[in-house]
Image (cartoon, rainbow, N blue to C red; front, side, top):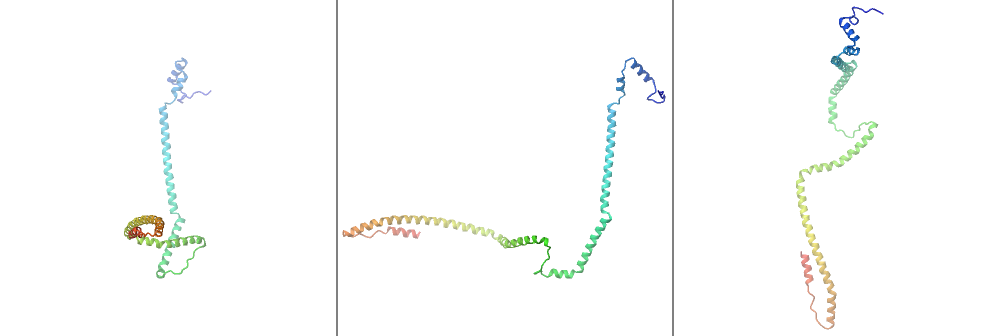
Length: 235
C-alpha cells in the first residue's frame, strides 16, 4: 500500500482530522454525520447554476448576433453579386435602347397616333381567341345597354318634374276611378228600373187590350221611366 503524501491536503493528517477520528471511535459522531457535513450547501449550488445559466444566455445572444450578421451579409451579397448586377445593367441598357428608338421615331409615332384607326386587324395569339370571343359578347351587351344608361343619366335633372307629373296623373286617375264607380252605380240603378218597367209592360198591354175590347179609352202610359233615363244619362 502506498504511503500517504504529507504534502497532499486531502491525505495529510491534521489536528482536526485526528479530533474527528477520535470522536468517531468514541461514537460521539457518526460517519454519516460527517458525510452530510461535507456536502455543499444548496445556496452555493444555486449560485453556480445561475452563473451557468447566465453564461449560456450570453452565448446564445452572441450566436444570434452572429446569425443576424451572416444574414445581412447574405442579403448584401445577393445585391452586389456580379450576376445580379449584370442582369440589372442589361435591363437598364435594353430600356435605354427602347427610349432611344422611341425618340428617333418620334415624328412617325405622332403621325400614327393622329391617324384614326379604321378597319385594322390586330394580331392575337390562338391561345387567347376564346377569351376574345367572350370579350366581344360582353362588349355587344354593354353597347346595347349603354343607350339606356345614357338616357337614364340624361333624365336625372328632370326627375323632380317627372315625379310631379306622375303625382298629378295619379290624382287625375283617382278622380276618374271615382267618377267611373259612380257611373257604374247609376248604370246598375237604371238597369234595375228598366227591369221593373219591362216587367210591368205586359200587364199594362194586356189590360189595355181588354179595355179596348170593352170599348174603354185608356190614356197613354206615364213617361216617368223615360225621364229617369234622361236624368241618368245627363249625369
